[in-house]
Amino acid sequence: MIVNLELRNQRVLLTGATGGIGKQIVLHLLNAGASVLLQGRNIKKLDALRTQFNQFNEKVTVVAGDLLKSEDRNAVVIAASEDKVNCLINNAGVNQFSAFESAEISNLINTNVTATMLLTQALLPMLMRNKEKPLIVNIGSTFGAIGFPGYVSYCASKHAIKGFSEALSREYADTSLQVIYVSPRATNTEMNTVAADEVNRALCVKSDSSEWVASEVIKSIANKVPRSQLGWPEKFHVKLNAILPSLVDGVIAKQLPTIKRYI
Ligand SMILES: NC(=O)c1ccc[n+]([C@@H]2O[C@H](COP(=O)([O-])OP(=O)(O)OC[C@H]3O[C@@H](n4cnc5c(N)ncnc54)[C@H](OP(=O)(O)O)[C@@H]3O)[C@@H](O)[C@H]2O)c1
Image (cartoon, rainbow, N blue to C red):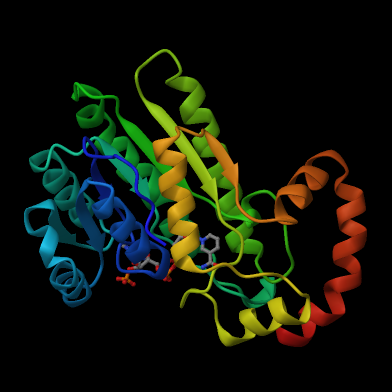
């Protein structure tokens, strides 16, 4: 489903544009009239995306680079300045379903948190010089509000992104900058391994299509919703975990043997 919303004045830098959710966000943004600067690591994937959307020709530019590298982040900032970007969507991310004792930490935290914060910091002066209301959209996760076994590093990174969004939004509350945080639940993309999909099925965790998640991201932008958790019962679980974490401890403890079978 294409969301028909007017976003003609948005010139968006989208990180992770070549990923499952990213590609769908591109489609929705272009259909809503926005221009897009698409970022990913792989130039071939970006070129394929540009070809896929060639009917929007002058509205699509691409910049390839690894956000972990400062020279690549600088290239993204230069491309964003040239395109006079007024909206940054921090969507790039990595995940790993693994026992903590063998979990990858540095690459995951550096990609999901450090690179995201450094890119945002580097872009802020340009965004704030813009005459139009600047916008930053951070893609979080249900695991940014609920700690879950098998995802210790990822949960830590997404909790950080949630805190980053909230604190940044409050620090800039007396300016024209708006910060939006969107938290999807499990989504059908290549980010999730076979084991991750299997444990979700075993626990009856619902998984959304990337198309639907992207349409919710666009709705949050169009309707200026500052924070949103996608999916039911996840909306409820997030609130319950905030108010009564020990209750959620008990529920997850019962799921632990199943989770451990798939880790
Ligand atoms: N899928 C889920 O279940 C789920 C649930 C909740 C939240 N999310 C969040 O939604 C966002 C998008 O996830 P997705 O499912 O669409 O993931 P995905 O399909 O794996 O795509 C990830 C994207 O991030 C890019 N990326 C990764 N590391 C990068 C780096 N160092 N520098 C630049 N780009 C990099 C990838 O670029 P390449 O194409 O070059 O690899 C790709 O475009 C992520 O922030 C994720 O945490 C996902």
